[in-house]
Amino acid sequence: MKYLAILLTALSLTGCSSLSSMSNLLPKKYDPMLGSMYIGVKLDIDELSCKDSTPDQWKIAQFDAKRLAAYSSFRKDPQADNALSVEKNLVSAAEKPTICDNYLKIVKVRLEILNKAWEKR
Image (tube, rainbow, N blue to C red; front, side, top):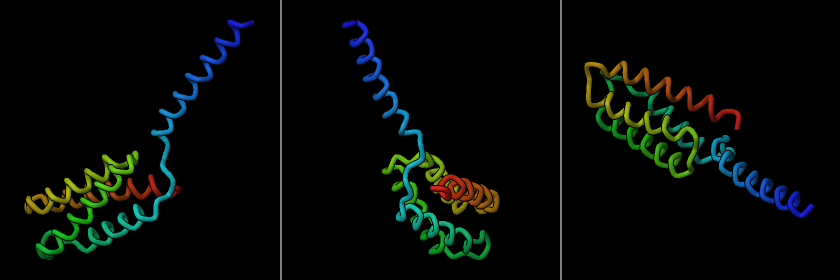
């Protein structure tokens, strides 16, 4: 009987640690600041054009994307890598005007993925 109690205690304690490590994979609760940052980046991207945008518009969009990536990484959000990718592709779009349109398309797709991941929280 003692052995059974010890075995059940050991199993239950191991189960708790497994559940806490798995909770990192679950979506985080809704964060209004993260949502606000997403909307800011989305509006910036919608205003960008590879031919007509000024360097200041690119800098503002890059800064907002950098804030989104840093904050989602700080929160350990499951979509942090995707947010970082938005920032990197936006920088590449500004640096490579010949293929800028392709990078902007990638950024828009990545933002859509972020939207789908975060919309039901």
